[in-house]
Length: 112
Length: 112
Image (cartoon, rainbow over all chains, first blue to last red; front, top):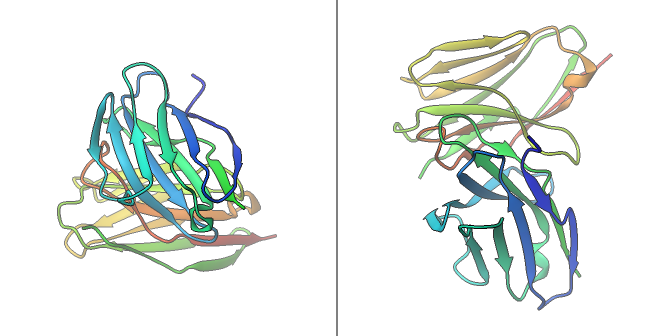
């Protein structure tokens, strides 16, 4: 079991560009969560998805951010028109629902 | 929504001593309380979790206690070792399949 796989590990974008972050959950896990971590801070919940459904997006900024978890393929977190304040580590986690969530290695986004 | 407070923010102990980290939560509907360890530049790793029908759980040198009436839970690490040095996060949620609300983290330093 390869664990939760995220790519890319590091992503540099210029202001105004789009960032796409990918997450493949652990085998057998149907629950996917995205969290954002700013330097020296905790993990902030963004969105919770199951296949083809957004279950809870209460932590997602209303504009520029979107997430999906299609029937086939990885979950995608998309940030349009990135700004400097979007620079952070974005972690994906997955769960079977019965046990705790396991995190991926994260994508470190730098906006220049 | 749920609000999780974590104390202390930094903790320094000598090797062999015990370390205790405390968290409080606000939502009485929370029933699942995991703890994560995050080393610098790495992913958060689930180290232990407890559900509200249990008051205490132990795994080797790590134990977690829960007081549901007072809405607080604690992580206890005994016989600390330098490799225990990391940032520890507590979290709370309605159940293991739901999104996690994290505390701000405790940076633990174990000095030889």
